[in-house]
Length: 213
Image 1 (cartoon, helix red, strand yellow):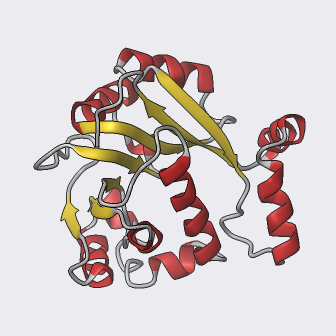
Image 2: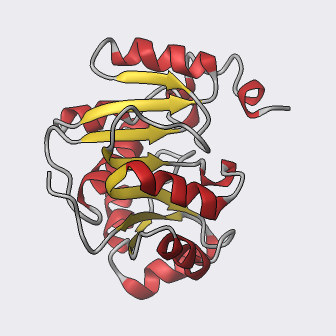
């Protein structure tokens, strides 16, 4: 089954059904897209690879960022276009070779790095058009962060910041527990213990020299 076929018929309610608490999950993602690594400013363009129905667009647009999404599924692109309603763009394309018309401040790739045919080549490709940072999630039980860091350095991203991301995807938590988990993201030993069991890092890869806005 191709990647596009895998998501056929699921696009119309993708965000609502993929996340138990989509507002909290995507708002937290957006917080880290903006703040982790070199900060983004209102007016900066974010290219969202494997964007699905552009659920991440809402909290990014609310922060004054510009948004362009890319997805391999034509159905997802149609759903993203409806959601954006002229406030951004959605394009059909493969994250491995999509090239934006002009450089972007940040590129994101959530829940999709494993779709890269060749991860080092993917990082090199993204580095060609990304001026400030690449933000993506990483499962440390699947990929060794040290190996990924080495691939990023070879692509020209010589800075890597990792933040544990403790917002569950498939379970909505009471607000006090959710807040406690988010606070645990910043506490070294508890965070490392949790990451051995579940959850992921959000990673921001950038360069020592950051292009001016």
